[in-house]
Image 1 (cartoon, helix red, strand yellow):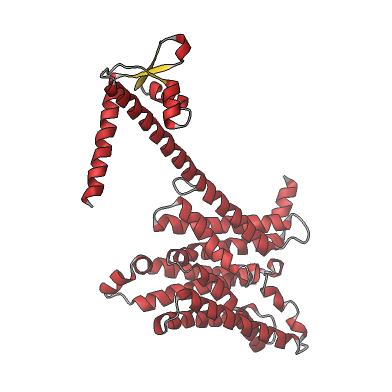
Image 2 (cartoon, rainbow, N blue to C red; image 1 turned 60 degrees about the horizontal axis):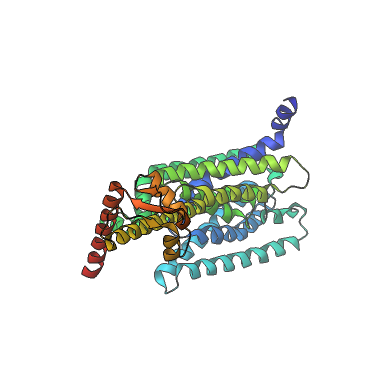
Length: 384
């Protein structure tokens, strides 16, 4: 217990955990809108576009001043966002092509500026390239105030224009018919996403920041059906992944915090894809198996009904071996299930002929219902 208290009391660990939580909250909440607007690549493009801003901020301040670097990153991130909007609205380029163009242009410019800075011999530039992959251990308590302020600003703006952002996200045409400034709202949403990316630059870095925008929202999408729930859940998943990655990285030497944060959220995404009710892969497989089992039971029930009709005997007992051969698979499990539902009875017959089954009164009514349902479906398809 004393070891845990000492671990959590460490100055650096506290800073990294708080920074990771703030990053997860902001990127998780705002990433939802990028995912729902089918602009998942937007986070990747904007995060890479902040690199020249990092270099420009350093060149202006002459040192690794976080406020200057953050302002520069926000400036170039916003410029890339506006470039994407202009290209998609004023040219024939599709969104993915515009995002790819913005990503490559701004990232190339950032690499050129970083190389130029490294050749100047300025001693303060040491470690500037850590913004590519993040350097969580360098976070200071003063940096947390800046990150916290930007996170609070982003969440307050999101809350203030919640209805407008919601309308633009789901139906921009309807929002325009109500007189809302669609372009301005879309631009504001994009700039807020750029702001969330800037918050995480020092912690996660340019290269991996896109995952912080997309992954929490993708996981939350599996568990929620309402936007409000999805935003809250995505923010919590982002914060959880951030704190988990920070704690794991602090347990051993040479464990990079940024990649571990991304890996922690990736684990949540994989679990969500597998186990989320109704949308998870295992749930879908379970539904598929249930449907196939139900379909085979109905087919066996109808087979028993038709055999009884052919023999003009409602209580005619059909041999299980004949049913197996007719359906091309064992029908014992289906007959057992039908028996538990009270639709068929196993009857005694000549011992050398194996098991025989007959429909109960409930079974005959259920078979009639299935036939009526199938006939109704066929008539509907013919009407189309």
